[in-house]
Image 1 (tube, rainbow, N blue to C red):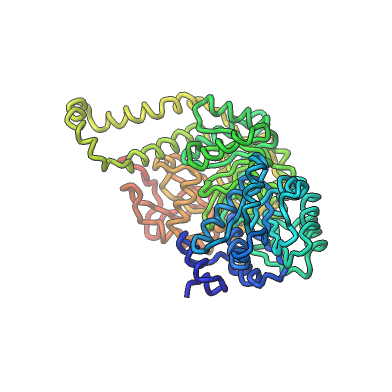
Image 2 (cartoon, rainbow, N blue to C red):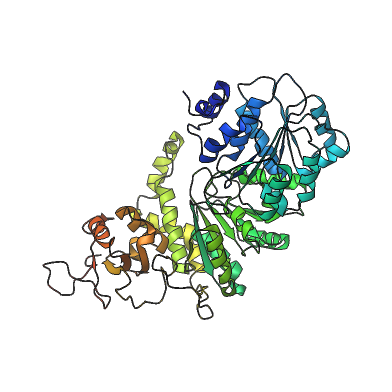
Length: 570
């Protein structure tokens, strides 16, 4: 039996879901679907975005509605046009093996006359934004008197957008509903109030802890002077050449200004904010979904309800005042079980917000150094080299030009060809970052935080720390450094992957050109040494040993204490 059938879904619905590539239900689907299929139980589901909530309520609705009756039986209310269309598209895919069931989107920014005509033809499921739905009710263009099931999706976002009165109005006009289902990423007091006022003994299901952030998101923050905020943003974008992300701003003016600045410098970006017409918004979102844009720069209101797969990074140009807004911003990445990165650019006076976010979201935030100009150039260089090596040359058309190419390059060595390719690709980067300043705010920032040996926020300090061998940590020497193509984040990932350890066992890391020192929990140090010592990386043998208290490499057992040229012959 199909796993979705095991939840009580019909064979047709289960087959449609598996056709989409989903073989196992997500946690929220496992907990919600059996309850919702009864059709008579009020329900509150707390889960982050990207966890499969649409299927959690969409599949039960499709099984409960009657295809023989051509009037609204189910109503789904959501905050934005984008989410409205996304939900409707998903339902279309779920019902591919069902006949006679119609789901219709109702939203602002489109012809209300056309939407009224579609409703009059007969529908069973209406997916609507609050404003347009109320307009339809007041025009008597929609009859909610026979609606049995009401779904409030992204309830907390609707309340943040000021739709409390609208939600109350809708619920008061669906007097014959048999059940109300509410889905939310967080549980603020206003969401709780709706539950108390309009639901009867609702069954509450929580996937993860309330108000927590997605565990697959790596939360990073960078401290910089206020006047360097844009330059820091630009450098972080350059340091992540494969980024496909969203930059959040507080105001539409910031979104527009940042978009114009980056676009003028050749970045594939556009802004999304409240001053755009619906047609302009649709065009920008289509370009972003098609990956014609690398980065979308958006305000919170404009970006609510965006559901785009495979977003790698979310960047907060400034931290939001409302901590719940941070949860929704970060939730744009790491969807459907994938991993992602949420970056925040902060001023030193905003450090208290980081502490609040850590406490409320129950997530660890990692303070990292803003990359240097050399870090950026190195990262871009290796990214380009990987693209060059992995380029698809299977197209036979290239063979036509090979004789001419071979003649043209007959007197040029392979090394010179590579240098010329690198020069063409990186000359602008090298010139721009040749004398790049240090953007890290150090002199005016002292973070008031108790020492936490399991925290990674002290990793990658530019100044050489004293490294006391206490507190459960030991210091290891390794003969790998930036000359081996590592930057700080990639080095961290490499040693964790090779040793199969978790990042919580690490303390500080001092990465140099030719070597590095790594602080590791004493219990994990032997495993790390055993995993790395003696292996090879790019043709060079790795040596990892315990370092002595003075920061020098400690000789291995049986080895005389003498200076060894760790990089001879390189």
